[in-house]
Image (cartoon, rainbow, N blue to C red; front, side, top):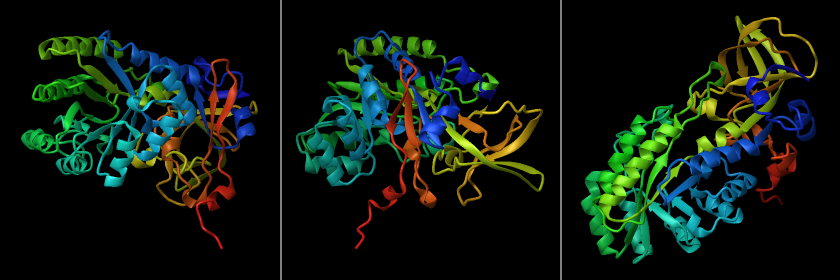
Amino acid sequence: MYWIYSKYTKENNFYGKSTPIELIKKYGSPLYVYNEKILRNRCKEMKNLVSYPHFIVNYSAKANSNLKFLKIIKNEGLHVDAMSPGEIFIELKAGFTPKMIFYISNNVSADEMKFAIDAGVNISIDSISQLELYGKINSGGKVALRFNPGIGAGHNAKVVTGGKKTKFGIDTAFIPKVKSLLNQYNLKLIGINQHIGSLFMDSTPYIESVKNILSVAEQFEDLEFIDFGGGFGIPYYKQDYEVRLNIKALGEELNEIMHSWANNYGKWVTFKVEPGRYISAECGVLLGTVNAIKTNSKTRYVGTDIGFNVIERPVLYESHHDIEIYRESEKASDKIEEVNLVGNICESGDIIAKGRFLPEIFEDDIIGILDAGAYGHVMSSNYNSRLRPAEVFIDMDGNDILTRRRDTLDDLLKVYKIN
C-alpha cells in the first residue's frame, strides 16, 4: 500500500496488523476503526489527573456508546454518564452497576424519570419545573442538580452549555426556590453538577467555572459529590502541530482546589469530571472511498462515500477533521490541490472539508477522517436510506475485531409493520 499522507496513524501504528485498504476490503466502505491502545491510554490519563483520593472520571457516553467501547472504559475503572433511557440500558449491558451511572436529564417526561428511578441510577435535574415533577413522582428520594455556572466555552455556539445563552442548568438566582422544593418534597440533595461546553483548549474558563460551582456548593450542606463537567479538548489540527491541552497543569490546579475546598467544607466529598471527547475522539478514524473527482466553476470536488449520514460534525458544527490519504497503487501525487471533500448525500451542504489543501487525490483512494471516535457513529443515520457503517476495533495485539456490523438493506425494514 502506498501511504500518501498518513503521519498520525503511522506514528501510532493505528491499524495494527492491518492496513486501511485491507480493512475496507474486509468490512466495507465507509468504516469506523478504533484503536484500543489509544483509548486505554486516554482513560489512564484522566484517572491519574489528580491525587485527590475521592475522584471519579465519568465518561460521557454520548460521545461514543459502542458496547465494546463501554466495556473497555469500565475495565479501566471509569464511571459513566447517561443522557437517555437508551444509554442507561446499554451501559447496564456493558457491566456498569447503577451506582456507576449518572443520568443527566434535560426536559424529560415523567416516564423517562421513572425509568431512571427504577434503574437505581443517580439522577441530575436541570430546571425548577423538572425538580417539581421529580418531587411529585419520587418524594423522599435522592437527587442531584445541574446549575448554570454563568460561564460557557466551546468550539461552536451549538456546543456551549453554560452562560447566558443556553438551555442547560438552573440559574443560581433560583437557589432559594430550589431549597424550598427540596424541603417540600423531602428530597435529599446528594450532588451538584455543571458543564460549560465542549472542546476547550485553554483551561482558564474551566477553572473559573469550577470556582463558581464550588461557591454554589457552599450553599448546601452534606453533599456527597460535585461534578465539574467536562469539555476537555483534543488537537483536531494535528497536521498543523496544534498544541495539546495541558492536562498536567490543569490537573495540578484542580488538585489544589479540591483539597483546599474539601478542607474548608469539612467533608471529603467526591469530585467528578466528565471527559467524553478527550477519551474517545483520537482513538477513532473513519475510512471511506473516493468515487468521483470533478471541477465545477474552478472548484475541485473530491467525491466520497462519506456523507453526513456517516459523520455529521462538519455539517452541524463546521468542525475540522484532519484528512489522511491511502492508496493501493504506487501512483504519485505530484501536486497539492485545494479541494472540497464531499459526500454522497443529496444535499449541497454535504461537505466534509471545504477549501482544504491536500496532495492530489485519485479515484479509488481511501480517505481517513481523523479524530472520529467522538460524535461520529453515534450521530450517524439512515438519511437517504443509506446504510450505517460497521465499527471495528484494533485490539492491544493489533488484531481487527468487528464490534458492530454494517447495516443491511433488510435493516431498513425492521421497524415497519408491513402487511
